[in-house]
Image 1 (cartoon, rainbow, N blue to C red):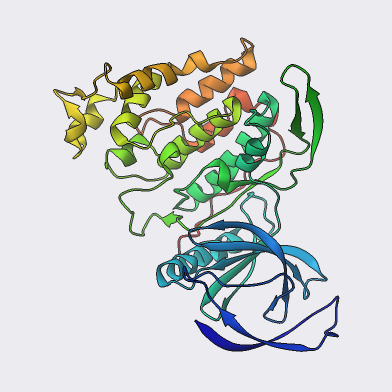
Image 2 (image 1 turned 135 degrees about the horizontal axis):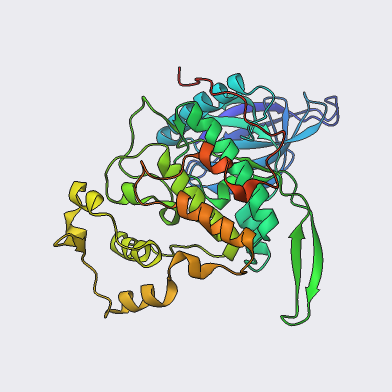
Length: 377
């Protein structure tokens, strides 16, 4: 689709390279077609692409109305369902900005939004690599226990802010937790004959509020990316804020070990993995679920003699057997994980309780959370 458009090429603080006429065009999937150097809204000069998703693309831009600072611009596909999701995300981000103008609660800050020829665009502070991408580029090496502690504390703080304000994120995963700065030091591992990175600063921000849901809004049956999906979601028992807490538990395990706790794409196998790690699914949950096809006589219908059964047996073990060091801080970490990964949502650890856990004693200081303001209206 072509649309007539004129854009001003901006260099530095002034337009000195003339006017370039060109047609705004989308590709077959609805992505905006752009080039490095293109300027949107006579303001945002595209430097390069940062990432791509089903929703659209994220580009790095120079913002010529903010003194030439670099920002991230999320350009949504010109497809109605993604545009509507973007409008909902903007609503959430505006409420977050209203209630946290100083950005103390570690959620990514929206700077601006606009409609560009059918593409909803949202500008954000420019952040660095996601915690997942850093691990991926680092041979999936886990983070150190002290790094896990600091990131975990910040994640709990950010998500607690959402929960206190009647929001559930619903898509927590390492890809949606970004470093503020992902600079690193390098050491050479002589045994494995490779360079290994250590991030210098573990300050993070929570991003992607496209699926965030207020308590009073419609709750989709299925939420969360598979590996971080809570048991009550799989069993279609209804969900609320505790489903985020389960996701956090899965994320922290991944930071600690370097791989996902539940590596599967099948509901029944996922439940079998949970049972291998946490013990049997509680009978109360089994009685309540409409998904009785996964159970037989009150127990998970699972054959351990199949190839899938062997896979689960070989790849999953009781949670405490994943401890990598027999020191107190590692066992405190697993005590925290057990609370976050409690089967039953009403028995799962709240994030206010999690932040008071002894594991966080070294980082619990002036970052005390100050208030539970309502942003649901």
